[in-house]
Image: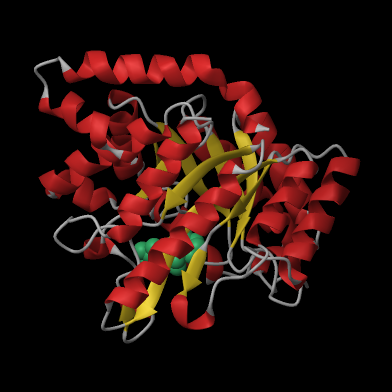
Length: 353
Ligand code: 9MR
């Protein structure tokens, strides 16, 4: 169990550190004692957020909150293929580099997101008629180029994102069509060569509970392990919606992946609702955030819990789901909601184990 590797010593040390930092004349340090990252110390789980690269430069209160509250960050869009290689052979890592530098300056780790996907690929890739052999070379080069650029600076990479349909069949993508199902194993092998230190994840949505899609991942990971493919983690995105309810078997699902020996992580947590929000929805939302966090804290190998934006100001939800929103732990004015308090209290409970 987690308590074995945490121990009282770490909790006591965290408390001591919190005390000594509070005496420093720095508002950042004082705020750190209150933030989620302080609460997460000693729990074995890192607390993260997706980061909007433009907001990170332009919005000072947002930037301060990213540094204060989180100890791992994921670029929400800045490392996607269309962002880094908008024209074939011409890379632009500017925004991603800024985030990596910010993370380093703030003692944060970085989750890289994402290398092989069906979405947000550059037009030069999707609109040309490449042969399968060319596509294989292009994919290998992409993985080596991007991971090579960040080599040693990325804690975990979402290597393959959203490869299954809801019924557990492989998603029809340019990769599956051209390269067949082995494109996934190839991508992980190349990724491991490109940056052997990074933890390599599969990542998807609608895999919070036990269902056909999460069953497919369970089977895939077992198969990859049998083939000695270096898959290191299973990322459960955690995009939930109150109107559909919370899966009842989230903890059991995380537990079965944990038992495979891979790391697990909640990678894109948000809990949206039909607007307007009301006190019951807000309470149910807090419970949704807490349920996923507890599922992570209950197993040995769940390494991080990342929200997909921490403030409604930059959440993707209203732009995609009409009439829905309020999906994150902070409102549009960066004021914490009950979900924030619940996450913090859950982390503090875990830190006392
Ligand atoms: O939050 C991201 C949004 O800003 C982008 O427009 C969108 C494009 O597909 O991707 C969003 O992030 C997605 C993530 O990369 C993968 N899982 C689903 C997320 C929400 O769509």
